[in-house]
Length: 102
Image (tube, rainbow, N blue to C red; front, side):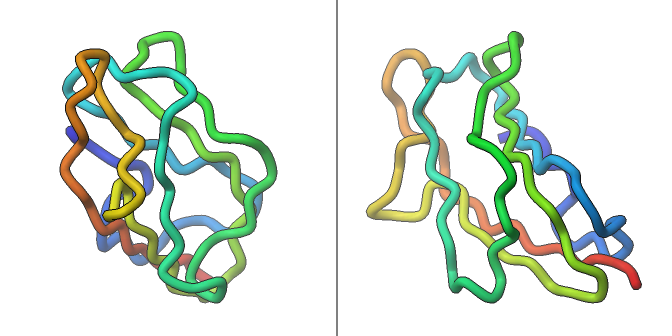
């Protein structure tokens, strides 16, 4: 993984409809992802299905974020490890935590 948007640890994410993006260093398998809930309370409300952009490296999750809330989710936390590159190698598990402003 190269980057996330919002950044891990970011505390001023704008609430409202947006997208969470994760960009990988390798070309990834389309239609294969693992956005893993820690709990219903910390996982954002999704507003669409995940998808990879045309670059085949950036996965987008459409969400709606509430103000003043901490969000946390795993990317590829076992046993859910469907983020894989085109050769089938699993992406390293990654915990993404961020907060929205008020």
